[in-house]
Figure 1 (tube, rainbow, N blue to C red):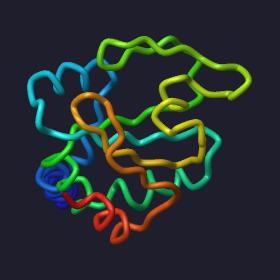
Figure 2: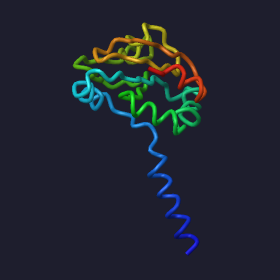
Figure 3: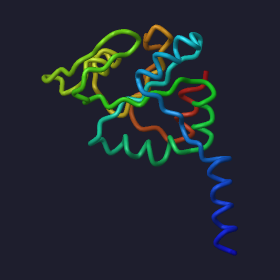
Figure 4: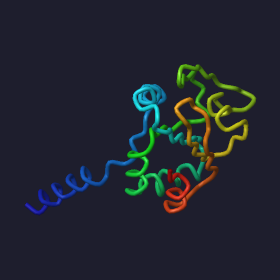
Length: 147
């Protein structure tokens, strides 16, 4: 009986408070931008080998206040800058650039200055409004992304 009550409490807590950031794929984000043209995009650019990117995932992005604020105010996208796949965002296709060791989408959005993690705030046209370079604590990140 104790196990059942513990499990029930865990499930309720997870449902009520543990939703996390609702990350969108590029395709989903493109559709949502069309449906919500005034909602900015929070574009999190990372690399799989990046230690500070993993730290953001484990410390900053899992914070309930961060997740709630992002889900309410942004279309959130996580993007592996080094993906070799052809990707499409807002109707434009982007491929991999071997000399840069990055996808052209990341390269373009970051102005050729590849540094991870980088969080970008984009308007509905995909134009960078703000660039937040490097690891941020929960408090720092919330301050940086406040609209």
